[in-house]
Image (cartoon, rainbow, N blue to C red):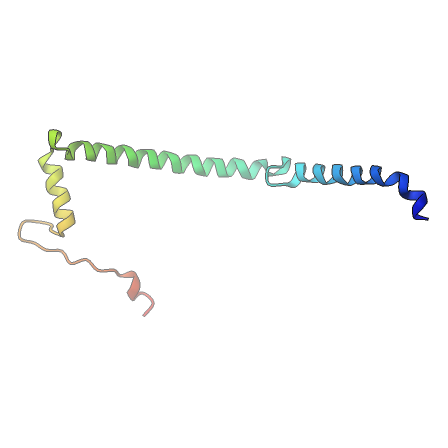
Amino acid sequence: MWFRLRPYLPTLAIILVLTYVCVQYLTGDKGFFSQESRDKDLIVKEKQLAELKVQRADLEARAKYLRSDNLSKDLLEERARLLLGLTEPNAYVIRYDTTSNVAS
């Protein structure tokens, strides 16, 4: 019986491969029906990129004013107070992590 089907095996293999490719085209990660989810991901990533660009511009502006040739005394004092934990002259701020006490 198999000897009668033998001439049709290459055709059957080609049909199976084409069926697999068509299903992947329609439903795969980059398929036709997944375009909407990719568009949503693109919108989210573009928002993240815009936020990062704003942060970068802010950091570049701060770095510009902390260089020795263009030093801003107010910005330098603000950074020193933040790093040292001071709020006003002669005042100390004690920082501690409150997230570790939540579980207890």
